[in-house]
Structure formats: C-alpha cells, structure tokens
Image (cartoon, rainbow over all chains, first blue to last red; front, side):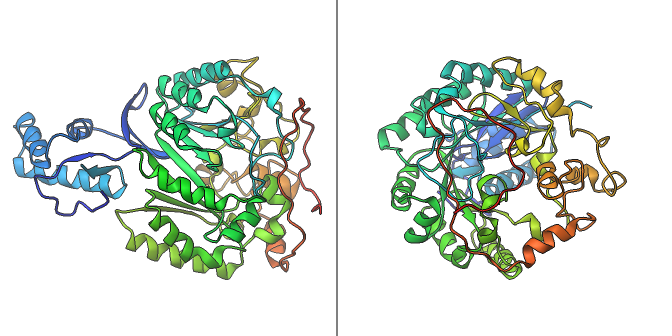
Length: 97
Length: 374
C-alpha cells in the first residue's frame, strides 16, 4: 500500500517495504539497506525496526517499546516512534500490511 | 587515511540486446569468452563483503544475457550483500523473474528510453519498449523494490511529464531521471544528446512539482547534466573512496570510464586479491587524497566535497587527468565546456553501441576523444 503515515491508526500493521531490510555491518553496526542507499540505525532504531515485523500493530509496537524503556516518558516514546516511522515511510522504506 | 568500499558495480557481461546510443560501456568491450565464471564471481562477492561492501549492483551490458544470473543473485545474498539488478528487461520471462526473486533479489532497476514507443526504440536501436511495459506490470506483482530508470536527453525531455505519468501508472517505488552522462558511447553522441539550458531549467521545475505531488508514494531522483553546473559532481563519491567497478573479465576499476586515463595499470581479480587491489594498487591510489591536485583545486574549500570532480572528464577535455574538472566554474578551462554548450545541435547519424565479438579482445589504449562515425 502506498499511503502516508501522517496519522496512522494504532491498529495499522507496519512493516519494512519491499526491498528494504536490516543488516549488520562489521564497522558500521546495524544498517537498514534500501534501494541504492542505506541508513545507519542508532539507539532504539534497530529495535523499532525489528518490531515492525508485519504482525504487530502500531499500538503493539509502541506499547512494547514503552515497557522496554520504562524509565522514559511514554508519550515521548510514542512521539519519537511515530516520527521515526514517518521518516522511514517518506523514504519509502516502510509501509503497512 | 583508509577508505571502505560500500558498493560494488559488477558488470557481469558486455553483451546486450539493446544498442543504446548513450551506453556507459567502454567503446572496446569484453567478449563472452573473457567473462568471469559463476564461481569466480561468487568468490569476488565474498571478498567484497569482507572489505565492507554492502551493496551489489549486477549490471552489464545486460546481466540477463548470462545464463547464471539467478546463481549470481544467490551468491550475492549468501555473501550478505544487498542485490540490485540493473536491466533492460529483455528476455525476462515470468519463470525467470520468479527464480530471481526466489534467489533473493532485493531491487530491480528497469531502464526506459522514452514514454513513446517509436522514440524509445530509436534510442535503443531495437524494438524493446513494449516488452518493458509488459515486464513492469509483472515486476510490480512481486515483493521486490522497483525503480524505473529514465535516461533523459535533448530529444526526450519535452516528454518528461508523460514519462513521469508512465512511472505513476506502473506504480514504481522510485523514479530515477538521469540525464545522460557524456562518457563511452554517449560522448560520441553528445552533440545530439546534450539538452539546452532552457530544458534543464524546465526539468527542475517539473521534477520539483512531481516530487511534491507524489511525496510518500514515489521517490524521484534527478541527475542534471554537469555541463550546466557551477561546480563539478563528486564523481563516484571520490576516486577509490567508496565504490568500485569490476568489468566482465574481472578487471577492477575506480569508475566506468577510468580506462580513458593513460598510464594507469588496472589489476584483475584473477591474479590479485580484491583487498590488495582496493588498498594497495596504484590505480586506486592514484587520485586519493589531494596530493595530486593542482590549483585551483588544491587550495579550494570544496575539495573535500567534490574531490576536484571527475578525473575522466578532466582527461577527455584538457588532456590532463590531474586538472580541475572543466565543468567547474573555477576551472581555467571552463571555456571548453561552454564551447560545447554553445554549439548548435549537430544531427549526424546516431553512433549505436555495438556488441562484443565472440573472440577474446585485447583492450588497447582507448581514445580520449573521437570523431563521430556514420
């Protein structure tokens, strides 16, 4: 599906788009390989991408991260996850099942 | 300073069913009998991954002209690489497409010559446009990233909106609008290919509007002709800094056109380890850093961004591979490029790309410039 993620419902199921996948580089660490480019993922980036597995809903992804990073403000986590996923969607690296 | 290669351009064959007038292959091509075997490529992909390469671009010629493309995809994936197939699409029957996807193909780049059949086939020198349209619809049904490569030039830029509409219709993920770069066969035909300044201005406006309209649906990359630029391109991201190309016979080059530079010896993967070629060989060292630079590059603040531009273009226009890329507005030889732009479009016969012969070739010192041939 080719739609934008500006205000995705929490029931939507995010996944990496076709031709986008995670890899591990010996010197760069976790990287997201994309058609003709790549993104180095840092901090919680690799974990967020891992949770977008095409099975969990967006609500599940956010709830999992909120429980894994329980010391952080849950609202901030939600904002950051949505903004991270929106940036991936804009690069055509993420879509919905 | 050490550099890590991130992408390998594997020209697995020079054979191709198309005869495009702007092909980036060298004028003297490798024959089939010179080509690396499946096992040799497999070893090379492993050596590349160990060096830090993440992405493999299988190209040619037409990579599907080899019977083992599926095995090459599988070998690339087994080495841990992201595998991109750059193809004309000719001869890609459904069973083969399925086999390539099953082998782990990540990304297909399908080239188009125009939105109109007649003009597209004139550029390709063969009837290919219809086949590409059929294939595009089939690719979209597979779970693989799909880019449409649109090569643009003076003759088709007037139809840019129709070409963007075609990309939308075919639902591609990415549209790459690439102006011809004037090397190889394109250099021979540059008099007919170079767009006008007005066309370049219009292109920018059309692409900006399309990007805005298609945001989140289709990415659009656009390469403008560097002849109209104020500063040169960071060719290949800097010589020997992040990219390498291996030709069908296993010769490792820092870029497509590197053979135009006289005096360089290029090593091959049959006789040397890839790591040695990347790290130690004289050809890869030749334009690393800034010791080779002349003024105005050497004291220019932009030298860490564009590395003095393209060494091959410097060679082709000034006869000196160490010179500032003549497209740079700071180059004392910028007039050479302005003279090309100022020329009335000449319309000789197209010089069509030829196919390599079936006998082993001796690659001789290529010509830096050539007269158009009929």
